[in-house]
Amino acid sequence: MRVGPGNPVNGLFSLLAFALLTASFLPAVSPAQASDSRAKAPDPAETLKGHQGTTLRISVVDDEGKPLERQALIKLHSRLQDTTNWQTTAANSQTAFDDLLFGQYDIEASALGYLSSRTAFDIASVTAFEVKLVLKRDPSVSLDAGDAVQPSKLLHETNKAIRALNSGDLKEAQKRLEEADKSWPSNPRVKFLLAYTYFARQDYEQAQTTLRQAIALNVHDSRALTLLGRIQLLQKHDQDAATTLERAVAANSNNWVPHDLLADAYLQQQDY
Image (cartoon, rainbow, N blue to C red):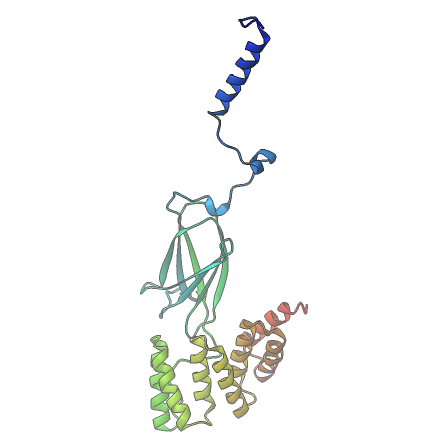
């Protein structure tokens, strides 16, 4: 067979050589990539890679717009990543979370003697954001000095415990109140303050046990019933919470807190 420029075999060899040469410079493509030519949306978690990220500054004020007198605890939950971060406010009642990715966040602020406040926030740029949360006084708990009608020794112990609560020293407050509860086991105020301390330390089981003891001493104790209902809501025991909060409303219909919590319990049960 003749080999030369006009031979068809030479043309075939030339085409094969060109194809091999071209393939050596092309990027590798996986079978999955080759079979799916549709454009895919970028992963939001990747959008800030290589960048500093967003800063979220949070300030906590009371219902008069003044910085909170005590430290607040801030909970930040990322819906996209399903992660939770915690920080406490500084002396100026502010704190900041840095390097946040794009997405939706749930923010919750809490402080002793105040009702928790929650909000949702959507981060969609690297601009620094500021959020202000307002905490209202919890009318169902008083962290002021105790009633002077109580025995002087009991008053002395409870006032020390209240000072510890106001300063955020929950361990000291619990110690004082447990000692007072041993000496005055039938005092509903001591039991309520002790239960509130357990609640603040997120010891919900011990808080519920102590609240039930307080309610047994005074079945119309609206404060104890309201706090018990709040804990039951936190633990997703919505039906029990509704029953407890109905009793709290009946005991004190002028307090808006059990009304508000009861509405939430009904909502969770889809009882419209």
